[in-house]
Image (cartoon, rainbow, N blue to C red; front, side, top):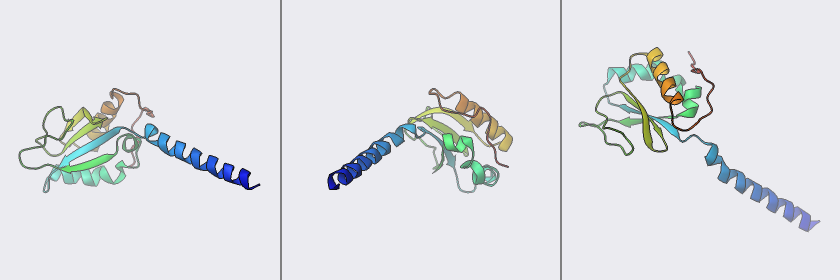
Length: 136
């Protein structure tokens, strides 16, 4: 009986290890980086209109949002196609490389439309529902 119990426990531990090692393969390799600057009114508008719900949307699941403070002189963050000099700028990264960019913020409708297009145009296939999953 002890052998069966220890074998079952070993199998369960091995299965857990396998599932844990496979989990990153199904995780998204995309990220949306928002370059922001203190005192930027358009950044503040984005934070009011989009940011509170972003993480609950399909887009937020596919490309989690990360904020980077834009320093004077711009940013040469690794993976950028060209330096970022304006705030806000939203850069979509896939596997550490820029695949799309939105410079400025013109309101939530424009943001969701442009982001949806960038996600649809990503080089690698990602499961998408096909439409923007906005939460108003």
